[in-house]
Amino acid sequence: MLKTLLYIDEDLASSIALRFIDYLNRFINLSLIVTHVEELEEKEQVGTGWVRRTWEDGVASSGKRLVDRMLRTENITCPLAGRPKVFVGDMNKEIIYELRNGLYQLFIKGYLDSSNPEKFYDLISSSLCSETACPVLVVKNLSLSNKCALLCAESVDPEVLVDKSMAILGESTFDIDIVYFKFEENKQILTLDEKEGGSHLEETKALLAKAGKTVSKTEVLSGTPEQIGDHLREYALVATTMPKRKSMHMYVLANSLASVLLVKDTRSKS
Image (cartoon, rainbow, N blue to C red; front, side, top):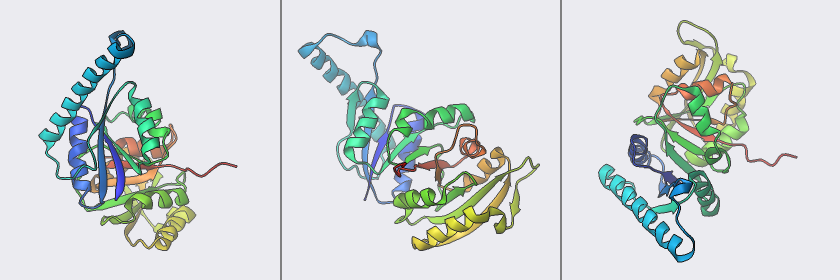
């Protein structure tokens, strides 16, 4: 089972993430823990010693009620691996600590698609998403599909993409496609010959075959990030590596109508 931490607030993004988790569990065997952090302004904090502990217990109880309401409202069928974890403090710091010490294999957070690339990059480059080794699934929509895709481009390292994404998707029952993206200011999206994917595409296919995975379909697509992002709507999720801020790769992910699974290069740098 895949040890997974899902962060929720009492908002629409978390509601969609809970429903998506319920669907995802049909394809990936999840061991799910739900968490929430009650963040407070400095002026709201009270006293020291037992006064502060009593106050924090009251704040945490409020957070637990929030989580209980969300779980009752969505009534998910994916079983929880333990009681929800509610913390008081800085959200990024508390979740990073929990991810590191809990040895989670996947972190999930809801994100309402704002079609704003800078907001999307702010999320994925935040300490919450960047300072933990495990992959991050950004749930953008309730995309119900039996297919997922590996998004490739010249800037995507095939070894990192296949090794880290298969740690999540290798035992899943999703059909896996490869989508190779090339940026062009076309009036409409174009499908190119596979050879246009070059050595990056060939290496990705070879590594997947070595991992024992069958690729259902391979596409080399030419177009704008908006066109490719719209094309990805047919997938439950799209797996790829962490992009750089100004790359076309990042703009495709920001415009993706599918949820995005971001994997990272955790190899030590010599």
